Image 1: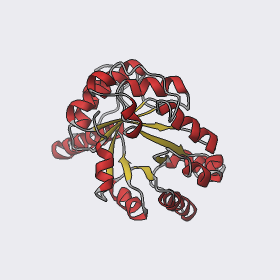
Image 2: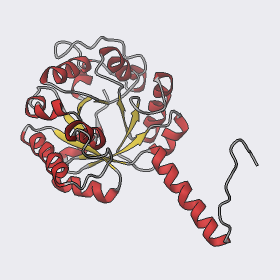
Image 3: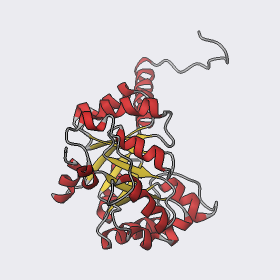
Image 4: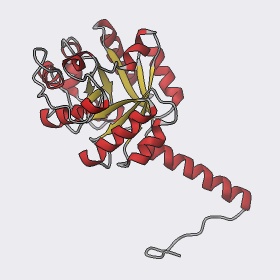
Length: 269
């Protein structure tokens, strides 16, 4: 059974960098995976993709040597088990609000006697010879903390046996805890949000699990690592593509002196 390399990185005391794929295309996933990320997450919750795209994207990620992860749409056993069967070595699960939710997530990801995962690792068994009950010790169960209930129950969630870590989505965390007082977004600077983000890392550390967070920039990711976060994602494929394309266009226009002209709606010329 293939070992999960992320555990080896953490055992060496190093943080993990996760690439984020929200465009449903294996070529995009292959490009991202070739850039040197430790892991690539395929986002089946908010990404523009479904299971038919997720499986070949996980195939493309594996070819690069990056650890394949996936964020599932919801806490639902069918899609969690099917995503593991497709070869994901870790699941990020949204909207985990209680200890019971966390216990359910852990049980869906582990074969008996540690859980209730159904056996049928269609692709995983081919991609990882020897795949079976040994996978219980290699796949990572990551619960998202992003709601007021999740924050209220944070200590109980983090103490759930078998839970490997939590993942913070700052946009939903802000929406869920600030009741509309602050707009959603990454890289929070408000003192109350920084205090909450740091508290999550502290509670994870106290329970021996990994704290992860989505960031907009490498500079902010470094700050969260200093706060105790052990895995960070920076931006996503769609944002990185837009940023690189925008910078290229801006540079071209600056060099040529040609300003952008307005394109009328419906025109292709």
